[in-house]
Image (cartoon, rainbow, N blue to C red; front, side, top):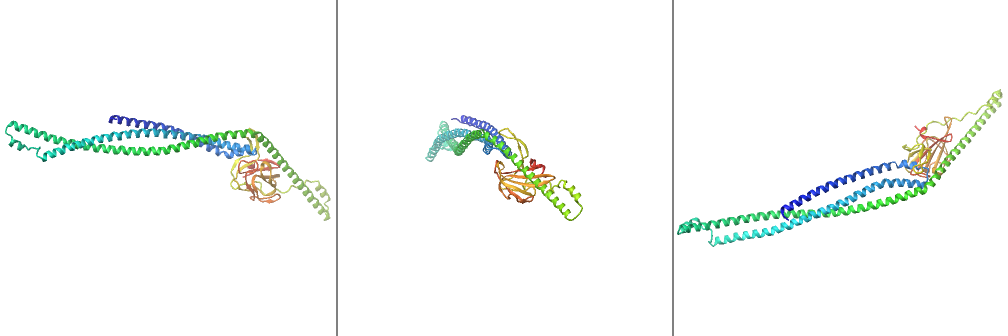
Length: 456
């Protein structure tokens, strides 16, 4: 390979490297952008996990879990696919890098061989020049050369002889000078070739090191690509399985929603019965109090018969209202994750009432009584899970009760008196619930109302 050809090859290789690098960089940037977008979307979806769990509350537990799992799978799948694309791009990059390094190494080895051959030829030239100078030195030592101009003048017998001997002497001097110059040039060229050879060998060593590092990077990229591919395939299989589960559980979920509605209606009917019984007890207590009052008047001999007759026809006075008309929050750090009201089931497309307010309460969080009252019951109750129901009596002429649902354990029992802020239990995930939280309900005259309307 000639010097000009080597230069042209090196320039072409450098240009190729620049073009490949710029194309690879543009492609890598595009992949990174898509991956970042997928990760942002995943974060948004998972950030709404509590909302989805709340929407699935009071539905079939297996269906709810399948929907939540499917959401996580479908949030992860685009990210995994983007990671797979990035890993495959890295595999391609290492393959291109390996090819370019192999070509550069081949060129460098060719340069090494060519320079080594030049050094061998140059060594022969230096040896010849040194041999020629050594021979001249030996001739001078024997007196065979370097005739002085004075000797030529004094020894010449004729002008012709002088001219001839002087010409011979001048030729020998020029020959000596030329031999010395050739030796100097040959040694300079030899040193230059040695320096070039050393530089090429350093380049070869560096290329081999880069090739070894690229082998390691290529292996890591292949493993990453294989792992991401396996993950994507598994995610797709899991996605199909969860969708099948959702289809299978739709009927059960429909039945569960209807059962929840029946349970809610039964609870409200029960509360209205309790209210009616309480009102009847209060009425009888008022009548008994009035009867005793009238008896006392009669026993005192006062002429209150007419007044007593009028009093017997009067309505009993209502019991005094409980202290305070505003409830307190049932958690120390109130954070609403789902509000009271109608909402659409994300799978069945059915509108139903979310009869309370959900508060974020990680497993085991203390749950506090929203007001003073008497515990009606602390028991397991269908989809409500572990439920504490507290009767706060009559507030502003209306019966007020609160319930605390999905508890992991109780801190009170039925019939117990509690004060506002007392712990009634600890948050959990019992009943139909997607995660630990508090489902808090408020009942006025036996029917649910928006808890936030009674909270500060």
